[in-house]
Length: 323
Image (tube, rainbow, N blue to C red; front, side):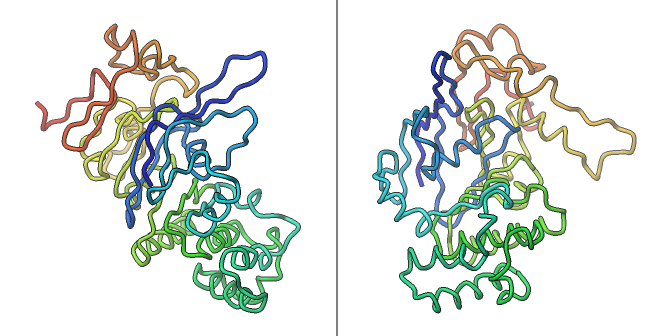
């Protein structure tokens, strides 16, 4: 998938429009995991819904270019989108309880994808559904087909969502906070499942998360979002070794580390994600940035890229190798 200058604006009668995603560009090669990282409200989930064509049509303006295997997705007919979604592109949603239909059994929700996109009979789809549930680690898969979502634990519901997403062996999988509200053991199992999927099938994975630990263990490339724009993009090792944007640096410093001496306090980012500046008037992170000055005002900073490491900042954080 190639995303170029993606922009999403929400319009409301009598109120100024709100730009949730602005000029976002990145690539998702086959067989690689790409992470979108940022605080709540940075535009990550809206980006994922725009990629999948799941945003409402009323009150939403989506522009730019999203190409999947060379085919432009923005502006596609509903029928063509439905033929791609589920078969070639799939999504694991953030909240498994609200994403699964509470009044329909797990078996029906898995088999309907198989019957719609793979033209299976009811019996064939049921057998395949059992195999899918086993593949994602759900015990007693045959019996679970008749269970409703509320009868499953949070981890099992998330696994059922992944089984639905994998039903047609999609070439692109978008996972929006797939480990939210799960305990650390189940988180590790879910991430191992996704990691194995990419390795075994060559599926391209877009992983949306605020957890930098998940990114460190899963992603090949990382894009950091703030106030709807990408502020830093780099390969995973490069980003963690040499974070250059003050926001990325702040995110890393606010995470507890095992090698930090006892009693050393965390260094949180000042302010809150709602304390931003309009990109048209300068860097959106400027009100929270400890390195800001007048050079940060007047207009949005450009994304400067050196050896594949892009950063949108006029005062990037110096690293020991730079000094």
